[in-house]
Image (cartoon, rainbow, N blue to C red):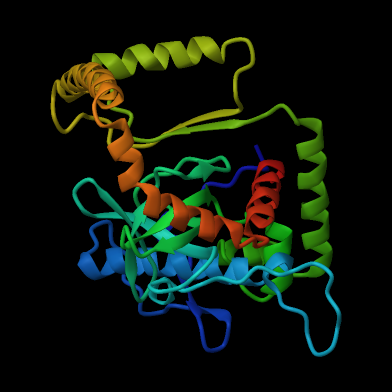
Amino acid sequence: KNVLKVTNAFDLPKYSYNTNSCTYVRDEKHSKSLFGNANDKIKVFRERYLLIKERLERHPDFIPPTLNIINEKETAVLTEIGGLVGSKGKKLVLGMISQIEEGKYYLEDLYSYILVDLSQAITTGGLFVEGTIVLVEGYYSELKDCFVVTILGMPYCESTEKTKEHFPNVNFTNEMIHCEIENNQNKALLYNKLIEYEEEHEESNIVVLSDVWLDCPNVLTHLEQLFEGYSLQPPTIFLFMGNFTCPYPGMINTTNTIISNNNNNNNNSNQDQQQHNHHEGSNEYFEENTDEEEEDKENNSNNSNGSSILKSMNESNLMG
């Protein structure tokens, strides 16, 4: 009861990352409203990208050695999307997944974007949707005129303690909390209390759900299944967020039917096409793709430490 604190979102300070001073600056001109404009949406993704990039670049795997210090471990180097065209070998890229054209996926950063081929991508774990900022490894294909992604992963996560070490004077939460723990002694007591409470309740968890449409029968059915699943070990809190009414009545049932029918049709058509390709023109297929295979082989033979970086990154995120 004294551990959780609910704060009004409009009472939280707004900070923006300053690339010149490499720190966070409080945005006093930020307008607090539930209904933002187009510029606000752009600013959200820009701030998110800068925050993740800043955190990634100060990770040990991305910090280059200084002066004449010999570093046995090769450091990773990020490549801007604008520098991918015409490049050779594997590259590490930080970008946001977007769908500029219907059915085609792109990677975007603050200054450029590029079409990506995800057919060969191996994921390191995570939920990848449009708007997700990801760290990818791959190479630029001149034949396909796109960036071929070989490994798709999430950027490193970071603990609160690490963030506070880098920005000790920035209060990301709330001025009221700062007043409550103004001196270091009270801050240490509160921190130790939270650690003790966490150790005593290791099995506790919080379930957060958004768009809980309570007027949809399917949602109510799934909620019942969710509650049954947690009945033996209920979470500390169920947190439901709106909207609580479905904007399009009957949309869920219709959508599920369409998806199911499309999947069945796609599976049938793919099987027929595979059989047709197997009996007719298999030699022609290999001849047409010889150049692409040679390009893939050439780029994959250019070894880099990117794969190991992404694997260790995935392990770090899982442990976090």
